Image (cartoon, rainbow over all chains, first blue to last red):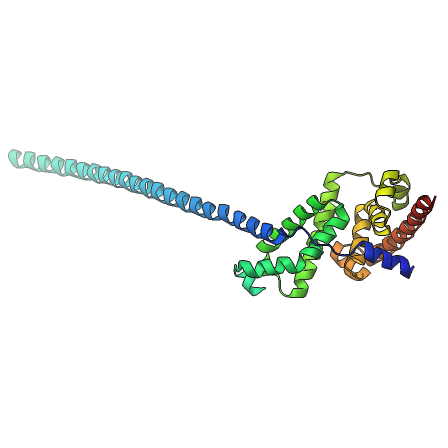
Length: 98
Length: 176
């Protein structure tokens, strides 16, 4: 049995791959790194675009909000003016009658 | 190790050169095809390159490389051939005899043994490769392949008995 196991060890002894094996592995690690760099660049560009679009949208939203608030303020001021006007006209009518 | 983890290409190349024979030979003895074995070995080292920070010591590196190579070989073989699940004995009995031309072209014992090993089912084949190429103990093989120790021992015992029987028949065939 021992002899047979030695025969197996001999049959399965380690062998070397092609001489340029390590160089090819290194080349592949570099080619794998390159897309990662472009990937980062693409991600950075996408983030910039999103931020600017987001900023623009936010400014638009703020503008619309300010407009709505101004209109509301004008509406309130208008109604207060109407009340004041009515009171003035009532007072002036009383003064005339007296 | 630390140098290669921090992106030193020369250090990583040294790791590849130190272990390329082991990784390639496990794949080659298992798959019996040099080109496929080289591709698989390259993939293992690329995977290592991405995971260098997880490697804690030279012993861990050796274990990691053997484990990843073994599992990838078995997966590759299963993808290539979706063989029916039959017993080891049935498998070897059904396997075709080597062609006469093969016996004439490769009469060396090592060649015959490699051909016989190549006919074993995936798991048995990997157990034999790890035991006799890498000189691993059954307990180490069990840990590497994530299978019980008893399974490794019984599988190894049956594989050796079958390989011996087959080899004897081969030898008688050649002698005739």
